[in-house]
Length: 491
Picture 1 (cartoon, rainbow, N blue to C red):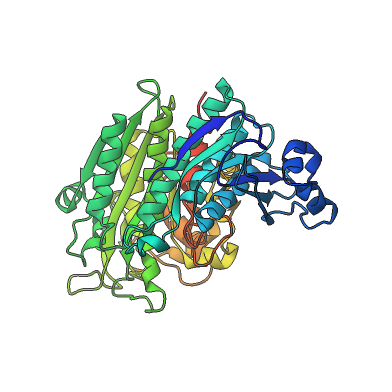
Picture 2: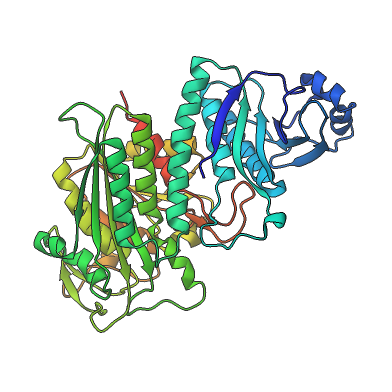
């Protein structure tokens, strides 16, 4: 159920709500809320003076509320607010998670004076914190249920700027929620067909053009690299192309490309059984593309955008590709398959070649591509690969605005030696050394026609632990980076 959001300019002390969340930085002052402090019998002032609440990032302190105003009050620490929108987004997500935890059903959020970008960030945060995936869980008995968070009020002046911030935040939040829901769905439900039907719903709702190619159409296109991954599964693979024409006719589009492995067993090079269930998340790049296109359509951005998704499953069977097989890619290059578990790059190779027909201004692909990137950067930063430093900086800046940090990785010609093949033009794995880099070097072979950046989101697209502001599971990355990059390209 979507979170219903609204603005209200009433004072915090008298605003009737089951839960009032107040975001404060690392220098909290109860004097800024004197009426609420008086209504709480001076509890805010005492908490600040005794250092019971210091305003540190993610610090939470609950108070009993009042009979005529908020039923409960919770202080949320933002820490040092160098990036105020980012701090507000995180605090709002925490506030929403607290509301869900206690079952308040609704909340009000106060973050001081909010500009347009601040209000957008708060909205995105509230939607992120309210998100949950309970579609496949039997509800508890009615008398044991906690209310889901369905309504939130942001205490801010109802101005044109505020309404614009709210609308943009709702669009971005919806895109994130869609991406997280798709990622959280099990592989037997979120199939290539389901991703295609989701794309169709987005395209129909926003007036976008949709093209879907199946196995037969891809064979006609000569997509031997993509199809080598799909040849072990009975499910029909899908190449999904969504075209959003918000800009001038003839303007080159920004093209977003996502890996959509709805489940990745590793194929013949089968993965260990431990945690293989997490391989349903191997389509987070594709989820990010679909989430971003939905948000872009909602915002009606004045720019042309193309989204490309390659969706399939990678399964071992009597028809699956074998290590040592050689296939011909859409671009015409021959690829030796060293490891069938290095399948994402085989799918992306043909997508990146297919992207040429759109005459793109720039192409950004995102994929949960390599465990090596997780070893290099952990679960904090996305690996950013490319050869144009200006474009790399543009992508990293977009990720920073979205709260999705990235870090540049080298893509030097010397690494090309690691993926030379004895029998083909190139091989799909260079072994363990520099594994994330050689994967990106492989993709680079198919991108000479346009400016390009690759995002390896293997460590950031989902989490195996609770992230405080977000629960364990899908984070929505790279949805925000995609959206902010596209917004940054509007002239």
